[in-house]
Length: 56
Image 1 (tube, rainbow, N blue to C red):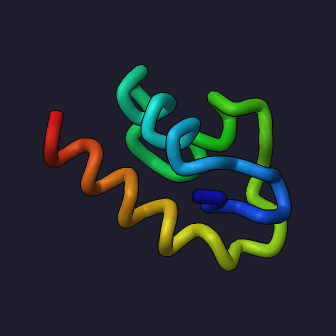
Image 2: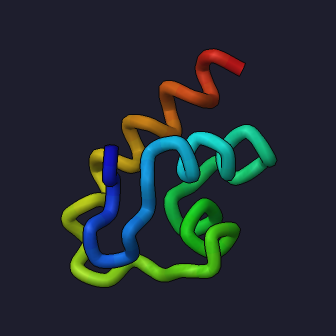
């Protein structure tokens, strides 16, 4: 599933970035070499990040 249309970030890539130590949207985007653009994905990304951190 695509999390961020502007940056073409897929959920699996976001989860992999969290597993490698990124725990905030800004850190995840930086890890993936991107920056949030419109910002509509941030709340969804935060939810995925929190879910991944909780299951670690």
